[in-house]
Length: 434
Image 1 (cartoon, rainbow, N blue to C red):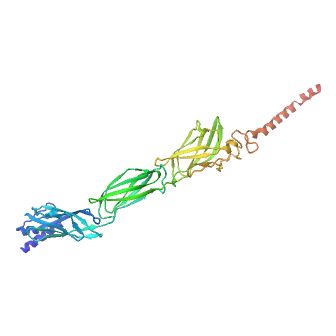
Image 2: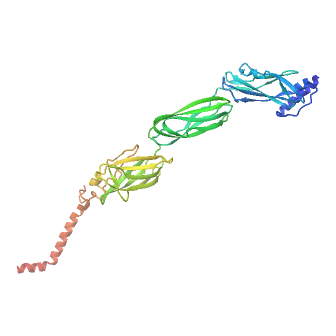
Image 3: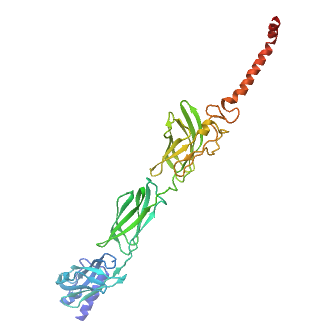
């Protein structure tokens, strides 16, 4: 009998090593004790895969009968000083295992610290024969999911949309499920309002993008929730919204301006340069109040202006005072955010002809840029070479129309002299008759 039992035990080990779990081929047993010897632990499942300290979960042990006869089993238990079974009363009756059948014992347990790997002993007693034992492997780990800001601008700008990436890393040996990020906003708009990730596998990471548009100094708190088994966990990630000047923004600079009279108004030409780091899209220039745009150039569309590039422009306007003529520049960035900048141009020096030349030197004429980072450099010369826009009052002698006074006078004197020389005989005769 002992030899037969030993042979049955070897057969059970062969079945286990072959991974036979569901509906195994039954083995003939000649006695109840032989049948009990063919009952074995065919596997177990952990939920969660890795426990947090003091966290509850489920350990399900699969017990399979490989005999051709039914076997009664009872008193299943898990034994370990760090493990507490919370549902002992669920297994108070005997279970009758039919040939090839499997029974699942689900234990509701909690694990005590410290972190580590534990090997609780599972035991179950057949109605006849010796108890069946098997050790399980359960890991306890207090390491938490890590959340950080993987991408954000150095500073945020009011009404400008920037991308912020929230990075989640699972350094644990077990998967976590139902991962969700919900932003709580103070002083900004954030899209999307929540992001569901689902399962974050063990040892993996993910970056989740959010679009943040501040309307004032504020903050965003990203609430991260996830499940480890049936246990809910939360962690918070704070993002202060430091509002300032965008170091990478486009910076329009107006220079090389020239002014001339045109009908009832003025014609302004110049260059606009993008002195910023990023390109400016859909750029348009126009004059602002108190100046009034006039046809044909009420606005001047430049389109895309790359970083460190420039473009010429023309504007027509009417203004009673040339000491403060605002020129507005509007553009967009690559994300479609709209920007505007107003440069206050002082055109009195050009209008009065105080400049000595008409060349484009790029030196300042006293204008200022109202937008952050902008500047204005005026043209040193007037709209007409050497003088004011009306040709009078130029600082250089002969500037404007006055530049022709001397040549005209000399021309008239020469013409009179030539006529007198050609008519000298006729004039002499007339004088003699008198």
